[in-house]
Length: 557
Image (spheres, rainbow, N blue to C red):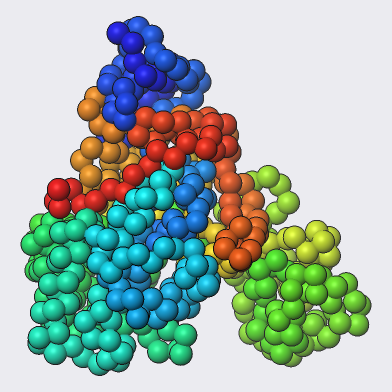
């Protein structure tokens, strides 16, 4: 029997957690036809000898809501084996949206997620009002990978309440309207609902985004409507009030009777053991509630350098940040100006304290994300008898301004992170692809997980690392036809050189609308990525194929 494509002779890690085995994967159209020993021929064969064959990865936390409009390749995650990406996280989405509210939603996305407002307004067609119409519009853009979305609290609340949505409580009737609107959006294809309780996520005028302080009554009513229509819940919490937030989360899941997914940066337990989430999670699990959390499998944070403008917060350094790259480089090359920067930093003790979280990514092909505290900018400066900013400036001068430091913001300690990553309710994620585009680049987390936690540290077996990134993640968003290499499943497949797979150094490019900047990060070790039966990536390079789909909530079909 002839097939369209056969991936021949690889080590198959099927995504279910089962032991790897050697064999073939046959594909007809967009579907896996056979797994094991496949006889016969194919229109095309991929030689996977020596490679590992896995399902395509599922990234549960992205913000491609805008970028899908002008980057159908959905980089950087499509360089890192991701074939399905969930956007609409953190409560911020572009639908539902009345025509008069477009600028408000674009401005909100700019301040919360660092996506340029002008790029949003000019790079998207804005030919929708309802959530279903938004998905129709995105579908016409022919993405390279599968994308699926959540409907956001901010847009839904603003649609019903207008300006009052920002700071006022919703009335009983408004709660009913918001819940109905969210339920309808799930009916139209959203896989669920997202909300954001973090006060630091603000509008251009500095006020917290709509829904941040919504009453529990509102969240429970919305959750009930989401569950009735087969959707999931996603949440970003106010981590300074963790016990209160987990209690609200529990009531949301009870009302919805569905799955919850929340962002969970490592948070130490009150007595110094375990985590701050443990008691609430144990109680939820004892009730049979389906609770799932995401955490980045490495430290997450900003990138500091002359290209990004992220440095230190003192007056002289503020002057540096206001310049463009060429101006910044010229300034630090001036000995007198450099001396002013150093003296100014020495007057502010917070600079040395901040330097404890700065780590140089190195000058090799692969960035250094796994360094210990002794390798921080602070520790290196102390060992050399110098101030941290002197070493920072040295690196900039040595590299013509191209050096980058990773400024750890959460999950600071990888040793502490080990136990958290392996708990049964935690999945890897929070790469934030599509957001914080000129400040953060954590989107290569899939490659880091395979390289660091599997190949180099054996924290996960290959089958467990892959299971968490495939079938376990696909289950959360309700897609039973993806995430495993089995006959009848959709043909999303990776062919990976596990001995080589890793992230490459992040770099700044100017490929957003109007030349706006963003950080990207390519990968190594991906011999092929197949999405819906078509080869979209070969030898770490896109083929130009765009075979992805907009995946709507299976319950809405």
